[in-house]
Image (cartoon, rainbow, N blue to C red; front, side):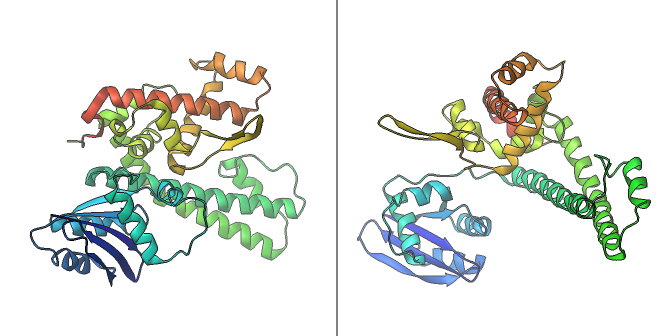
Length: 340
């Protein structure tokens, strides 16, 4: 006596498609996109086992929490894999068709499920992603300053504009008032971002020093106090992965190859994964070029083959992803334990 359903979640409403596996009856409709509406929907089927598929897009959290509060079982679907299982044939795309597709995959036990992190890991992940967002914003504003200087033909610009030498260089510029204003506004925003980011980084460093999984990840050369929490939160529970190659695929660092008969196209990064995890692994792998790095020989060998520094670092990023997978799998459940 099971109800199997698919939810297509939007900001204004949720479209559902539910199948009663006992009678074969299909229930379709829409409800408001609120926790109460989801809880009331579950109450339509008293004393029934309910399984609901929800795509891992914005809004999945409150939907899954409301389902669990009423005793239903949510299943988080990986968006890209779920869409790929529709096939390449063109079909009409509607909210009802999307909900029916989720329900069908769940009923046939073919739903590509995403990992649903526990509450404390969600808190860590939110903080690490917020820091990454602030870093991207700061980089964008610094790029605007560099573009303004280049636009006006300013030469000899220091590489680090945030250091004392860089700020002194900016203060001595003789530019049109509008350009000066743009630079001043950009630098003020950068300073504000740095002030917002300081307490976040302090909390992440404290987490990395005390949390078991982060401590283990930091044994790998290049992984520091600010990248270890990102790798831990984005990789998550690695027991759901059967091999280290799946960890590489999860990062989006794997190479997509299109080959048919004797023809093949050069592969590119799939980028079908967590951008935060991809960034953290790449930043950590760049340390391989240092003389003290244990991967120094591998890095030099890749350079001798003609690979650029970014491509060599990407290759080492994949190797680092495999190492992190094995480290976390060896720890088991301890890798994600909260800090006491």
